[in-house]
Length: 114
Length: 114
Image (cartoon, rainbow over all chains, first blue to last red; front, side):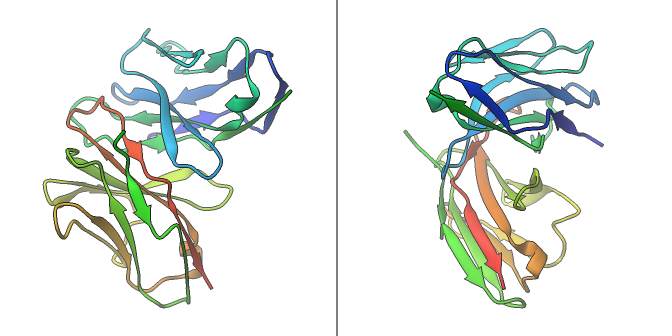
């Protein structure tokens, strides 16, 4: 079935360090891909998305490119801030004319120290 | 900015009791979802709801679960006879039409079954 695999966490970085969180997905059909972020005590918020191969989603300095050949959607940021500390979830939906249920990865806890 | 709200934020119940979790989706959205996250595990899809009926459900969503949109505003998840393993964070989400549109999530209800 559909699945998403994220790198194991937690990830601890110093401020201004480079961030990569790996994500791979099952290639069934033509999925849309998402990164959601969850700040402490809050719900999941969409960070960025990509709906077809080679699309690059970007927001708040974060980027991820939909790579069909490697079935990957890795999240990157060039210089993290303390305020980026949160849990990050990679997710896929079937795309097309589906009802759009999301399949999530296990989440990666990011902690950024000053 | 419109947002999805959920009540209560925390519900404690005894095993075998019925619980109703409530959600108010964003007002012009058409698709509604429930997800759950058992502590330390992935966010899992439970059910999607469109046009006043269930459009898709997971194997978790058995006969003990039901959903309703009683008044065109609220969207509820009922668990008829709670089990210990139902303890989790339950998230409601909604989205506008179109499979590529993002789902907006509520802050979640933490259900604890004793």
